[in-house]
Length: 453
Image (tube, rainbow, N blue to C red; front, side, top):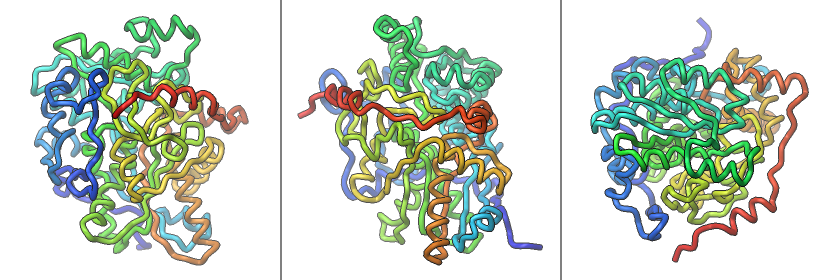
């Protein structure tokens, strides 16, 4: 038998607790603020759009939060997910580096997003909620919440960023197959959507706009709550099952990572793989380089300002201290739709400011090239978002080839690209190009940051 390619854990090793990095922060986060009063948000104020169980997790500083039995029962369908040693990619790169990847594409929806969708649907169900509203970019989160909603008997309404709605019809079909309603955003179904369309009828949408529409409807209906796919603390918490499993699997492989890599849009899959390792270091353990990779066309971490900003375009969601390009900024329509968000998770932003995260950015053409290079070696076609992590991992492995160092690289392959074939068709056909954001538009958006004392 040749050396192992994959490392598998039994269902009994599915984590029983989520890891909350808030417990180990050397400096506390800046609190989220009420968008009207500019005062720290209370739990009662958040109950307008979130269930109490989720709010408690959002505000918790407990290190371990137990995963409810019904949630673990659902997660067992695809968790623990496999850890792979990318031996064929290592050979193709002729690198002494050891490359491991945690594969989240084994979930029913093909990405890591289901890890939080199931948890959020559960907490809403036990509190008597009838309907969930949400936003989605590439469709991975919308697909996951649609599936989770059908499991727990909840109606789901998804506002999908219009450019992705048109680019990815099969994601829309997946949501509808599980009973969800999917609407292109901005739409005429909400006040904020109608206002945006009145000003710019051809608007291609953004995650900030889609969030505004979903939050507006949730706030107006007592039987409806809002579910978010990234950014906030409770979502990042739910994703830590990824890194917790990876730590056990690396022990099986007798390996310790020198670096951990994940793509970043809102921050959930990166936090999922990286936070358990950062937490170990914060408690006195070994330091691991954690690389957060974002698109050059929407570089909130590498080019954004660390400031209080609105989480949505209509300025009705909480104000958070985060790296931001400005809530009114509309990213260009590149294919990694899940990374087209103007801000970065407050926790990821905070840890970046403290020096625990190294951000970098790449253009979409080099990321698609890396995705195909990975696919030809490892037989998995990554999602366009995941290609950013693949590009960074290959870059680091090539540096090892040049230096002769045998570093151990771990990255999160956050989802497969089976619903993204039009993007690959366009890339292979030479129809894609690298897109630049307009610095003047970012400057205008940043000029609209809320004034916070």
